[in-house]
Structures are given as structure tokens and as C-alpha cells.
Length: 289
Image 1 (cartoon, one colour):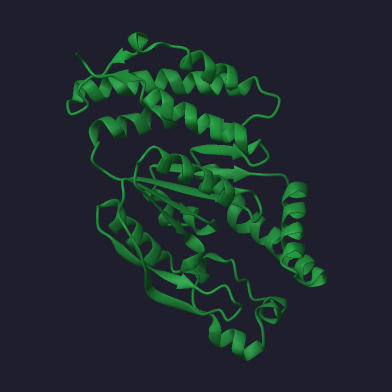
Image 2 (cartoon, rainbow, N blue to C red; image 1 turned 60 degrees about the vertical axis):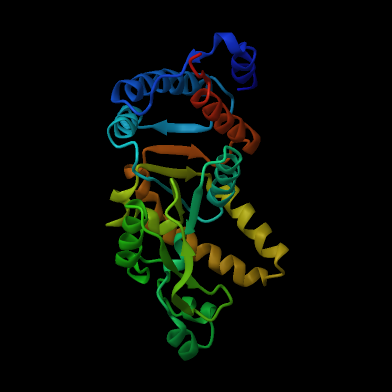
């Protein structure tokens, strides 16, 4: 990817393509054709790497997405990112945010875990979150999320209206507080978490991304994270066993619906370079004299 970026960055200003009028459909169609060519270049380069970033991209995703940009340029872009626990989706989401913000493009980020239902009464009844889990309560099942609320609020954002999303407290109390955090309807809206690919939410996204990482890597990351937080290792292993089974049932099926499957073990700096390259090609136009 360094070679690919270097090749483009050596172009002089005079070699840049004259910027078309993106306010016209013809101008946007030109941009779509240009971007489709460049995206294919990225995928071809990636396919030759020892550790690929893109495990797969649906054949119709790029033309369909670019067609959407041509015909509905003013609509918000809604991106959904999912993957099993410790797959690296939060890290990737953070890197996407950093790069988009560096391009001075407004972005909103939502963690779908905030749409967990309030289970504080159950935790009080059984004594703790861990005891509730050990009693067989399937905490990651779709019915434990406010999916209709997530769907309605994602739709509001996509249509240009700000919302106040819930806040799920991660202090072990199981408390969820509705209408707590203001989220702006920015041009790009990213929602990450396991609930993004549950019905009916998944149908709202313009880009659906699945972060795929081996069980061995995820387990190592999960237990290292637990150790760094001084969590009891015996209980961490119990919770790992639970989320591994829950992931098979509820998260892995999302690969079928995802437009892009990203390798969660790819070098994060390589991922950043790909995002920078996309930024470069979308801005490699010079204004007409």
C-alpha cells in the first residue's frame, strides 16, 4: 500500500484531474466511474498482500453504493460495523473516525451496546451480572436489545434529524437510561456493535462491515483486556465461554449480510493507509481555472 500511495502522491498538481461539477448528475456519474476504478485498484493491490485487509467484498457493493451517491448525494451515509467480542471493531471504528475527522467531515459514532434493555431488576434478584449469566440468562440474545428504538433512531439520523440515544451503564448494575446522549445527524453516521446486523436494523445501512478475527486472537485479546482491568481470571474465562457461544448464534450469521468482511488481524497502520488512500483519490481533483 505504501507503493500504491507513493505512486499517486508523486503526481504533480498539473496531473490532477479537472474537478467536475458534482452538483450535476453528470459530474457525480464521472466521480462514480473514477472511484469505482480506484477501488478496484485497492482491492487488486490488497489481494497480493501476505496479510490481506479485505477478506471479501460483495460483487455488487461498489456499483450499488456509488449509484446511491450519484442519485441521492444529499442523504446521510450510514455505516454499520459488527464482529464478535475482541474482534477489533472498536479499534477500526476509532481509526475510521480519526481519518474522517482529519478530512474535516462531520461524523457521528454510536455504540449499539447502549441499546441493551434495562436488566437492573434481574441483577438485583440474582445478585450480580455474573450470577445472572451463570443462571443461563442469554444476555446477548437479540430480544435483550431495544431494536425497534435503535431502528427508529437510526432512521431519524439518516433523514437528517438529531436524536437522544440511551445510555447503558457499564458498572454492572444493568441500568439503561433512555434519551440521554445527544447525537447529531452528521453526513457520516457510524453504528458499531453486535446489534447492528439484527433485524430490522441492518437494512438501514449503506455500508455493512463485518470484522472477522480468529478465535485464538480474540481469546488472547479478551483475556489480556480482562487482566489489564484486574478482573478475576476464572470469571473472565466463564464469560469468554459464554460470548464465544453467543457469537456463533447471533453474530457470525451477519457475515452473510455484510458488504465488506475485514480481516481483524490485519496491521492497523495498513488499514489507516487504505483509508488515507481513499481520502486521497476522492480529493485528487483541481478546480477549473
